[in-house]
Image 1 (tube, rainbow, N blue to C red):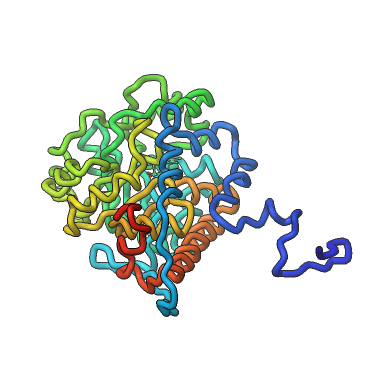
Image 2: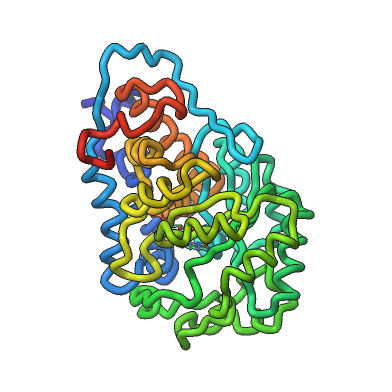
Length: 378
Ligand SMILES: Cc1cc2nc3c(=O)[nH]c(=O)nc-3n(C[C@H](O)[C@H](O)[C@H](O)COP(=O)(O)O)c2cc1C
């Protein structure tokens, strides 16, 4: 043991006293974030729907898939680059849209945008950001997409889409899985509402925005979600913008086919981080059938429970082009602002590189179902 009283510290040794402040993986950030957040913010960040069965399955089902190591494959120089919508990305990790970053850090989405760019990740900015899309775009030197919660006021929704494109967002992600909020008991008990001083900055001017300080779960119909959204809207929204339009929240292969019919340029397999319909399947379990239905026509992405490089390689092996992370980068944001976001992505990326080396895959194009233990997804 190094004797700290003498100031002897080895760079290679992490002492017991260092451990709480020296996260070495994504999960290490969680307790550190919890210690910094208000009870309400922590419950909002962490919670899932109902009994949190789906929330738990997202992790458990990823853990249960086994990888098939390969030896002497000479995967010397790992290259994680991928291509999506005609652009090259340095790696297949994106930041999922999440609301209200100023609940987690005073610099909010600006810090997230800086951290994301520093780590070469694509940031999908939420409609429900506490910073406007124009300000986020000014801070974002990396790739930026915009997530759309269609508003009941379709004229306002159209303006929002046009604003996002004008600000430089390179893709539009329509969240399709949230006509109402899930029964999120933890955030209900914690009285989740936007604290005074925080606003839904993209929704300024919308009549419903005046209600942003009210408890979110007063009524099953949330003022910021359109419960009447249908496939017809998707076709119409596509006509408002030139950027690729993805649909987020697809779990059924039938819906993936409908998405293609209605012109989706990409599909995000997601159960909203287990926050919506409890006892919906883990997103990793839904992925193979969706990927099979899509048959390579558009990129399929996945989120839900991605915490380790091995999770990323499993998703890619089962048909995803890329993955998104939600809660982990919010832990990083809470702990250390932009730097925390950057570190979370970098840790996940370096774990992905390690997993690729063990599985004998030098690049994402070499990752397929042969990397999975027989019976686990192949
Ligand atoms: C605090 C929080 C806020 C979220 N806000 C949004 C949102 O505004 N729009 C959206 O489409 N999804 C939202 N999501 C869902 C995420 O985009 C994503 O699907 C999910 O977090 C992925 O699972 P993970 O947290 O296990 O990585 C939110 C998730 C969390 C945890």
